[in-house]
Length: 114
Length: 113
Image (cartoon, rainbow over all chains, first blue to last red; front, side, top):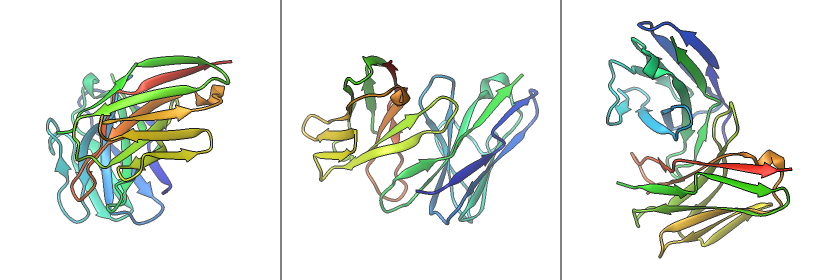
């Protein structure tokens, strides 16, 4: 498995502002994903972060709201833009190896929007 | 697309007893089934997985069984301990480029001391 870290671990933000979440992996990985987990709910895939190209977004998620960067094979960022209280969630980074599709998750970023 | 259902939503067992959590999936082509454990305040942890060419897999106190005909797979935890208390998520996927995990809604397991 990979060691995955996320920064920040938690934050409280004002509505209308933006927050950038960082995901760092200790080894190169092919696949990186961003998920949202609303309180008491399951995991919802936001997008697949592609190295060197634009992220692939799932239905209901758009680049203007959740811009993603992936400059190399060990790092990615997710920005939550123009936040509202409905964006209060846990945001999780995960990494995978294409061949077997095993995914390993980071510790998450707990976001509260006031 | 794939649909994964998990029942019940909560399960309470006495310490030392066994716990069984069952998931059903809809896409018969799915070939990889992981289980995740999420403790309070942490990210999901992959605890065991099974591929469609295997009927059962065991790792110490946990095991997973797969019934492809009925399209369900189950997590078995024996000799439960309080530290097994967590939310457990099952998932399914047809592995390959651009494929995505589909998660169940999760079950909260409580182990009573």
